[in-house]
Image (tube, rainbow, N blue to C red; front, side, top):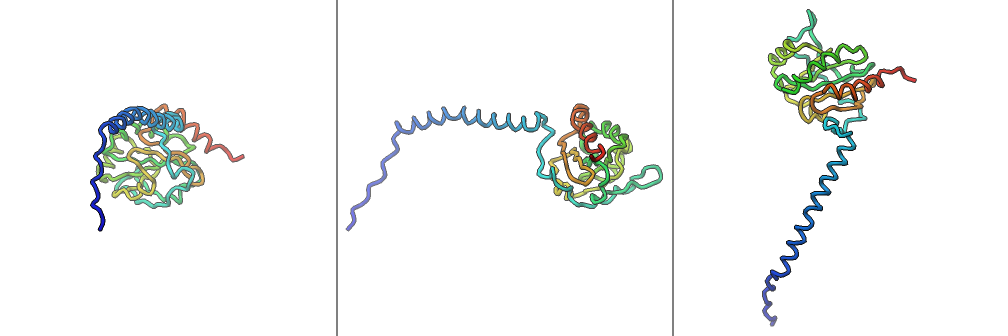
Length: 206
């Protein structure tokens, strides 16, 4: 016959108090470590929040073929969609945009100027947009793109690892992704990062 077991002793409130005090002491250290991790991650991107690392940087651009934006013309010629396999031979910027995106409107004048640079090709990926709205946006703000592919359901954007709009990917002559800008381009990022990168990528091979 086994003897009845006695219930476990109740927690000693005198022991629980030091444990709570220990947690209160450790909390500032945890917060400090979290802030330090954030600080060092910003250092790795040069302190520029637009330079979020992408798993695709250093890899070939996803091989997608996108239909053109219906009814979009340059003069009398329809503007084509784009096939990533054909984006070779010169540096290319793939700009992800939408008519409903306010920051896209902010960066658009910069895109119009970049489109005048013969060293680089600029193409657009129209993200989850209505064709009428997209055409109206370009009619009002100008057409900087050599090609515009439509992604009405956002499936191509998933392949490209898009966080949101706008985003801009920089491809080298071989179609490799070498840089990614998250958020609208600014004059500062164009001057300090994009233009030097275009110059490097378009330089004659040694």
